[in-house]
Length: 599
Image (cartoon, rainbow, N blue to C red; front, side, top):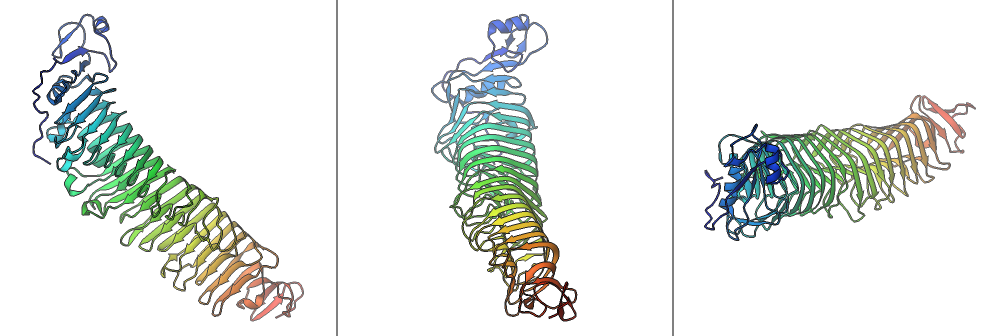
């Protein structure tokens, strides 16, 4: 960043004198009305000559000169500092230097166009504190079309079009920003209580870019197209733009409906000494050509890697993306609590996950909640994917509905580690060899230490609810409560040492049953209130595998079960001496509970 920055540049064209009048507010008023309300007071150079208490001044910008308007506009902005500055409707200004908006100023540019000309090498609109001095406050800019022409150029933060630094209470509203190159359309840094709303972009880089420190920032109602991320939080930015840095706290980003060449919203933590805390992202639509919402690190620079992202809420997202990308992509190495809710998705061509947790290096995520997801058609990718480098301590999935999917698509795929998984109120129609929860066979060390699945239904031909088919997978316990499957072959397909706890489970398929246990699997089934389809197998056990049942409702050929004292099941093999019906194992003997016959 240059040590000094010119507030304006000379303009050889003759200028009209600045028109300064008095007003009681930001509305347009006539001189006649002004005299009436002011009791005869008039302003000359901003000085009250007669009348009662001073009132807010209003400065009307001069008419465009047809040449360089920089000096004349900055003169008017200085004259109107602390008051209302109003552009002339229909005016088309050209500038070659930054326009400075001073503290206390309301700049109204509705119907005006301001173009930063080729070769200017600077910002178009900024505030005095950018170049030093005290902080600015209470700056409002309303309306106008702000254009960065092709080939403006510059370096560092001069490449941004609208640049605001060290401002308290900033409002940017109803602006249209157009750029033909260079960097961020609107760059905020070291701001408090900033609001950017009702903005339309046609820009080649980021739309709204927030650097730290920033407190209580709101970005809302953004439309148009962006050549990079539409809204980005980077508490610390890349080296070329790293003029300010610090925590970004209490940010709300909402009502985004844009076509973006990158992400629609990016929330980074910055470097290890910075953070993005208490961020809400809601109501995001449009199309992203990268991930819709990107959370965590930008590893292209150390300044944007390793910072903390915590207490992030992402909700009401309906935006689409392109093949190979995701709706919410979490790659951070220092991400805390993350809550995602209200996703809607309908793209059968998509092959990415709706939510993917994929840090580049091993990382621990304390809490991830995904709820309120509606997928009318899920493509090849799952709803939630946890990659091998991720360990999620608590993963909660609630109110998830998948109306249709590609054959073989899993709803939840854990290739990394989850300490505690809670799945509640899920409805999924997934055809083919698909599962509600899959530990993929290609990742040897996939782990879910404890899983609970409740109030859930799954339908489709083939597959099942849970799959852990590698002998090296870790899945010690799965609890099923009020679960129903229709057309799914198996409640669980396992090659692991796993305890299944069942309560109010209904399996409506004649080709399978509770568990398929492979050669390295050892499954123990406990619980009550199990109902399986007539003539179903109950369990199938591969060579070397084993099943022990403590569920009397498990209808199975008990010769397939381990004989363990107190184990129980309902025998379906009429050829066994104990006969068909409920049996219990005492020692190494199966005994019919009603007839006493043994096997």
